[in-house]
Image 1 (cartoon, rainbow, N blue to C red):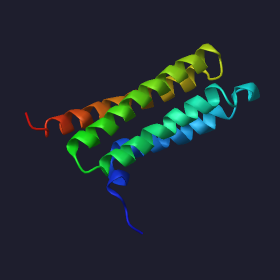
Image 2 (image 1 turned 180 degrees about the vertical axis):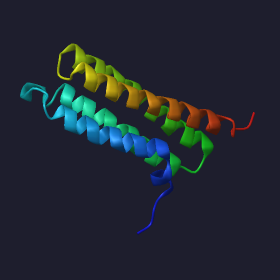
Image 3 (image 1 turned 90 degrees about the vertical axis):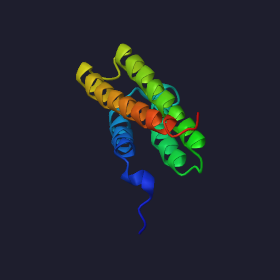
Length: 123
């Protein structure tokens, strides 16, 4: 089986772990939130990994940068939903801190990746 380049990226691996942890923790969210914050949090988390994977396969540095920027923005969206989940007491303070720290690590990695791509652009 072939290993794609995105699978080797630590940031993608971290995003993948984050998705799993968010799915696990959100299982305990109220049933009436199934199509609300539960769905939004899960979709935004999966979108991070998907945009990294799609972005690194793009042909130009400009396109790669755009997808990494989208992944970064989506990671901020995850932080937003984690804050709301904590405010609504869907997650504990410990769960919030653990997920927030992992998410912030991903934002830092994405920011560094984006900056390295930007240095490759002409001009």
